[in-house]
Image (cartoon, rainbow, N blue to C red; front, side, top):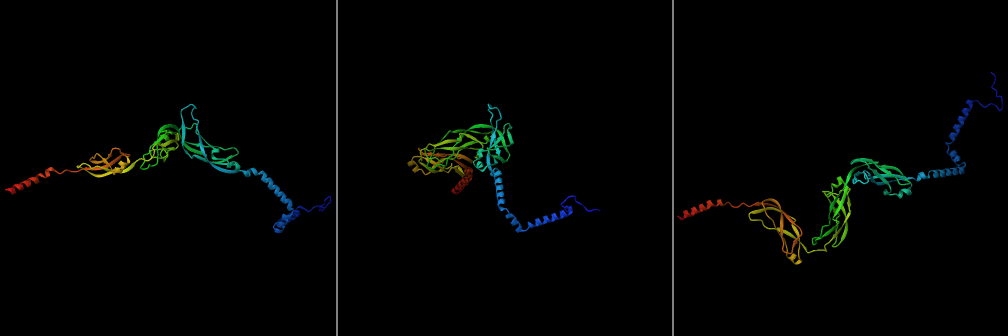
Length: 364
């Protein structure tokens, strides 16, 4: 076989297997050089100036391109729910109300620039609950969040709320005055304006309201003050939600100050001779008496009269006061009365006869 001949110069390169082995060996040597710290340090210092310039340019470009994204932050707000109900025609007298809303606020998380989020308040965010067309009764509806401009809604908790749709009613109630305990030597008089208010609420809520009272007030003689109103049920608990119109009343103290008042014990008169009192409880045990200072100085007690009757009973007490004196309280008494048994007239007759017989016998 003739030798391999290349028609042109330069001489033919080595065959494929010889090239592959040499290149692989060279690559292994280059890779092993990176294991040497000295070699690595030398490569890092090589052209250090251009490298630093390139790194700085890359950082500037990254900062500019991602600046808006890095400026975006998140902030959460507790937003009260606003109810919208356009059920019925505009001229209709039908009114509806939503009660027992659970929960009453929504936790809203917004994304935006820090300066924009810091200037926002929960009142700037709208959490809208639309119950238009929802039949009366309980419901479970979604809440729509309207994010302010230049912000994005990221999250809301919860997305749905529960509640109750009911017809709305109004009722006129008399205002009950709540005042601090007066001093014993005073007889305060108050005037409330207006004396009646209108309470509006869902029908099942309004049915729980039994009275409307003022917040307790402590007024000096002649003083006048506004007192907020509170709707209460039969157990004295606050009823909500109830709208009162007006929401407060004017309370004025009409008396001019202290009066000659004295606190005296009540003493009941004795029962008839045929009756005996087993127990008695006065309520109250003392009364305040108004009179001229000279007359009050002579009084030590107040006499009370009661119509005693056999058995257990609670009776009113009639107070006996001298002319010109007046008691500020009424008194009652709880009594347990029994009848005293009278001696049997027939039990003494035989004794008398026997005595008489003895006398006669002795006389003979």
